[in-house]
Amino acid sequence: MKTTAYDCVQMARSTKRPTGTEFIEKVFSDFIELHGDRRFADDPAIVGGIATMCGTPFTVIATEKGTNTKDRVYRNFGAPNPEGYRKALRLMKQAEKFRRPIVCFVDTSGAFCGIGAEERGQGQAIAENILEMMTLKTPILSIVIGEGGSGGALALAVADEVWMLENAVYSVISPEGCASILWKNSNKAAEAAQSLKLTAEDIYGLGVVERIIPEKGDIHKIFGRLGTDIYSWYRRYMEYTDEELLEARYQRFRKIGIEIDEKGLNK
Image (cartoon, rainbow, N blue to C red; front, top):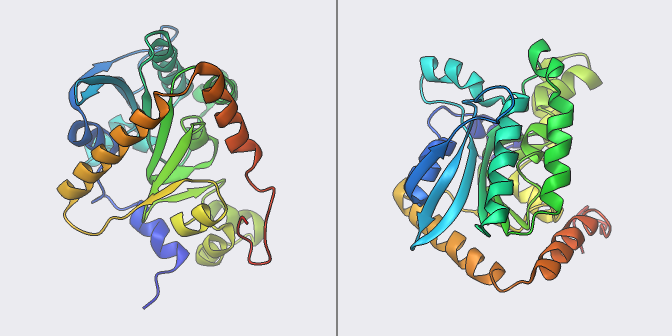
């Protein structure tokens, strides 16, 4: 039976999927977590710090949903507050200072929309991340490992390359939210998911991501292959000058959606 777009959404949300922290720990070595945004608080929905791969230091950042009920409540179900995005940006600016490559693991249904988050400048924090990431003079790779939801995901995904796991999704809105707006009926989420073109295959066809990471096989082998691919990516981008890096990143985003053929795919 053919897998539908909404099937992918449900797989992306599965509690059995590895979380952002697990990707950091399995793909990298010697992870040292750093905390706080130096303004308000530490947000456990975003985990970040310094790790190594083949002796090379990386700055790694991940949205974290948690692994059980207690942990998920603590992590706010992977919905970051503005201090989480400000912590991420602080670590990115630190990475730029020391020319460390940045790897972000994205898995969030979206930024937290509570009153406190809005009072502390949620929209401004996301916008600032998007603005600053466009001009960071160090290589950035973002990998959507589960849900890539709206601006909450984009705040960690303005990168030189964006990859997606095979069963991940990336969308401006959840299917349920889209169905509620368009049809006033969240039960039409499956129809909305199909229209949103949010699967890895759809997103790749639209030129929004550079690579789809297969999920077949033992999870430990997937971690191993991903580590090899990340290091190969780093070796390619370390050859860029600052000017070449920023120009390539700028052109990457400028070309998205410009040339669409009759099938709705990039030429």
